Image (tube, rainbow, N blue to C red):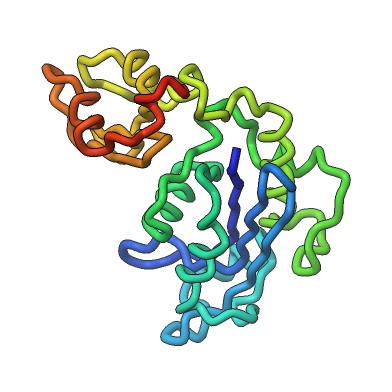
Length: 235
């Protein structure tokens, strides 16, 4: 399926960036191979700045602001390279998915859309060790959460296989345009979560960010991406 799940732990960001990422874990759903990264704080912000940062350290992920072995300015490059080979990326939670999409410039599917349970429930069900940074059981660990997400995804592949039109249809739950979403899903499209009427082909990646309900987006699709496999009866 060429898919991966990704999770991260972070401090709160300012402005357009909601997070200052510390710990990231990426797991291949075909091989269950994991890539883990720990980022230094941004050079321009050498210390925790708010009570929320201190609370997160003490009560949530237990990560020190100063921890890390990778410079923060490399965040985008490191994560782009680590996810480049995957056609489908999954994370849990809209805020994380939106953040990762903006960072990677790549669609990230929210596992909640497909019925994935709460992260806490998944992590508590696992019988494996946390990473060295999260020895205490009460702390949230990206490594452990990624394992939980990956195990759920592998056990429920039929729910997340976006090559299936029925799975693609699940992404249209918030669709409000007067156009049949089942037809769009049959044509290979998923709904782009951050838009009102945007759709994306899962095969060629073509995005139509604003569709006209009175027209057929498949016409534009075929014109702009004539070699897409969706036109070769491989759906």
